[in-house]
Length: 93
Length: 157
Image (cartoon, one colour):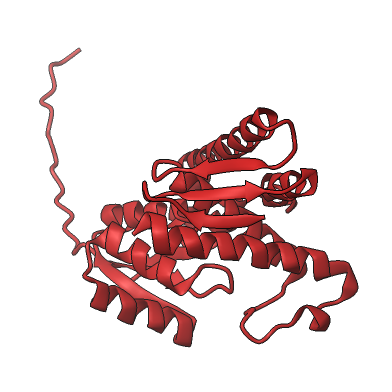
């Protein structure tokens, strides 16, 4: 059997990291003060910003509360759900 | 039943009779009254297929365990306090350290009742506007909400 050379083909595939949005949905159970409190606790927002986002959730039915890397978005949604807020993540438009 | 903030930053619930203890015990019963558990209902909000698969495998079991731990904590606090005063009048203390377990358990109970009875926003609702078969559940939900408001105002912030 003849020796054979091994050719290594390196393929580089580069794609841009698509940002993901963290969404919070309105529900008739979670108190507005609690939603504000949780947004401050998880994202470190000040009370004013957290209250604005909470009101968006309340009035518009949902709000994008954070956008960034997928892994971090998953972590934030896990945290929000552990506080029993209706939340999800989706690719940012 | 009377509920008051304490000087130590917690809440004190003073029960008057066995009926009050039974009412407190309904918190944990209501919390598990929905056919589909809360972690699964929250997980169903994840619409991306790849993320949803990870969620089912890793996150939902963790959340379910954490929610059960909250309920177990509250159930044992109520049971211990009830034994302490022989099922009659007596205090039940909620310390700062207990607050999240209590708030979470009350929330689980209210979310389950809402899922079953679909009350909707409660601001404009009166008990008389609720179908008779759901009226008791609505009143319990309002009672749980009142304790949550006290926890939020006096203990958690």
